[in-house]
Image (cartoon, rainbow, N blue to C red; front, side, top):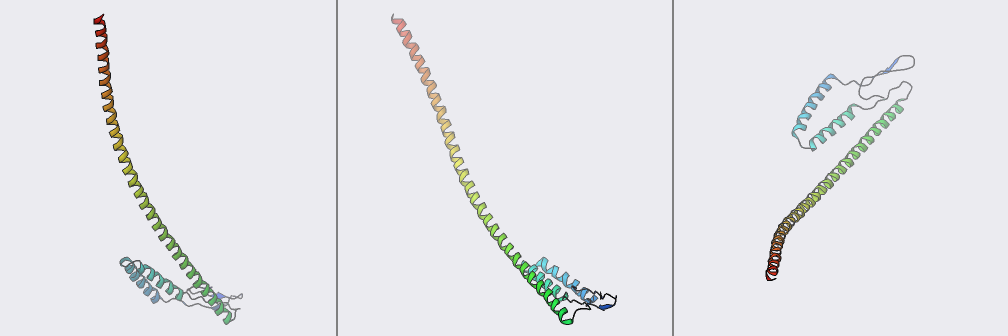
Length: 176
């Protein structure tokens, strides 16, 4: 099996049975220039540009790598059928891979949307929690101020009670 290079197959007796096509030097130079132009497009373009460039690249690669099976013992029809079978397998596997990539991309987008929704709900919950915390902190400060006021009033009340008790004792002692 061969994918775009020159390969000689030999029979058991060592004789060369044939050669595959060789890519000419000008074709390689043209491809290099085309790849350079494609890189410039990718750097400037949108997300559809790299997809288009990759699609063109794979199409061109498939065209250049037509499978030719040359073996001296195989009839030409069998060689052509085997080449067509390999090409069909290649096309089906490429289509399957592209579908799998698209499914992964769709899943990734769905997970991204789900994650963004979860982040938004968590941020909203955080805002509610912070608001509740501020309210409770304000209520706690107000309660502490009220406790201090009540403690002051109690201490004043206790002092007055002691003063009244001592005045009542003095009055009792003074009467007797």
